[in-house]
Image (cartoon, rainbow, N blue to C red; front, side, top):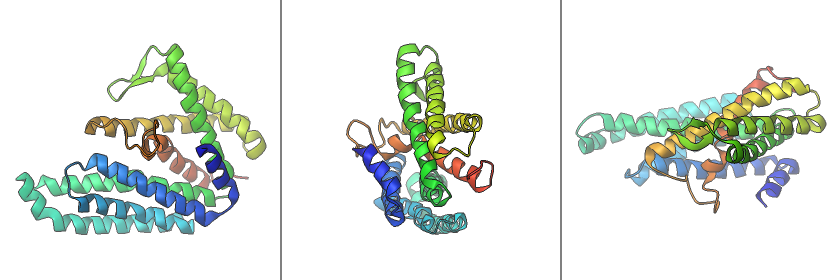
Length: 266
């Protein structure tokens, strides 16, 4: 159901709807992040983080990276204003001056990690062959996750990052990477034929590795805060962050590789 809806959204050609849906998805991801990272804080702290994190997502509608950058600066500006206003109460609560700076860091990282990252789904769509590149990312993610799961379950012996995610293994990583490369090459033949299979394999190796880094980043945040899942919006699958974590770093990377011409785009 979710897969069919995603494919329809990609190929429908309704740009404003794609942007709106990712604005909403980004908002949900921001809510999950600030619920995890700001336990015990005022509701206004979390609401401020969500609103400021939506700035770059909203600015992505124009399809121009400079608009997203400007929105990101506005987020920083208003975050500073908000934190200065909270300084006294936070200092009194903690008995030192670290409370305000800690809040600024937690909210600021969320704006970058979630708001900026999610804005690149819309930016990528605006590029030439944007639909096909998003389809490629989807294939890489699905193949990588599936092959890593079964490869790790059948062959896993050596832990990849036991302190962060004990379930992940080096064997699973290798299986996921191989599966992602095969899927990417197969998808590229009809959709992105101007990229040679060798270049596609190398690109997939990079994107798949970055995807694992994104996955581990979210796992690190959850483990640090003592949380199992980022949310329960998808029964049995966790929250938005749990499902999108591997794409949150890979999508911006792909966008900039294309934007600056490091990868041919037809």
